[in-house]
Image 1 (cartoon, rainbow, N blue to C red):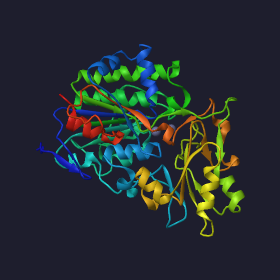
Image 2 (image 1 turned 180 degrees about the horizontal axis):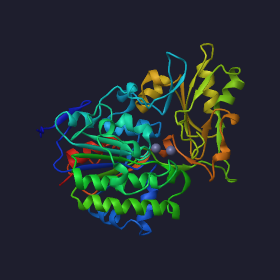
Image 3 (image 1 turned 45 degrees about the vertical axis):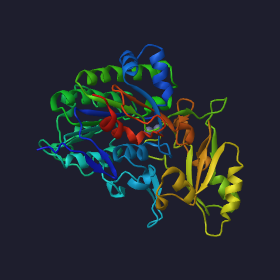
Length: 415
Ligand code: ZN
Ligand code: ZN
């Protein structure tokens, strides 16, 4: 039995889907990727879709990293509500840097779990397994239950843990490398198959930014990736689904004229000011998959010793070339909607091509095969909000966020 009335989740109300709603989070999809690909004629479906549907831009969550934004999209709220403020944080209880990929760090239910409780069918496919347990938190698997798996671990998916087995046979593709464009293609291939066989009420497809970290908009490497997505989006559209595409964050070149990463080593700066190891810099981009960004992004948070003069530290850091803004914990929480207990005393955001590291010896830049492209800052905040439908009754002055994707797809889409 399904309850067809509207559902309230995390203080927002969502209409029941009239037909399948597919929300795609294209990881690292700076707006220029689709703009260039459409101009160059490699996304024919998207070109037609944007002419008759919606072609909007919106702001992602800062830090412009993957986990805080994916969790914002699926809860409809910023990190101060759902708790996932970065890929990493300093656990105040243990003093350890902890990866926030465990559902125990989540402070709000997802839109999926609220709708599933009323009988909706949910399908979630992610690239990397690190996101899967967060996105699938609170769902029920087993026969006729929800489905949630990653392409990375698709061969290990089971009915009990993922709501599906035999994924690799169903998709008909080999399990791709975690560092590949195919890791994302597998998601869409699975999505199309599952749309035909299961016709879920909700489908959430979340890719990896492997391609965007390597290739600039309009290049062959980027265009072939977007052309691939275009073909699958056309197939989902043909199945009669409402499509909403957004991104977790943008992506920019982060290197100097010589092609070297353009880095502010913040731990080194603070060690020089306050003494070695007195302050502790946390880079919330850090994750086990660092090959494509060297753990360098445009956002850092710093824990200062009690003896530090915070105003003086702020003034010194603000004066560094390439620093966009230095905020106190309270200022950052208010401006970016972050939970105060999961950020340090200061938040530092770098501008344009600059990234923030800890110290030179703690970043293995030898693994970077191309000039660095990365994200994390305000410079990567603008992302697409596209749909194969028009959004009716939307206030033209509304400040749209990427975590409005379900609101737009359920409450405004003209079907
Ligand atoms: Zn991302
Ligand atoms: Zn990335």
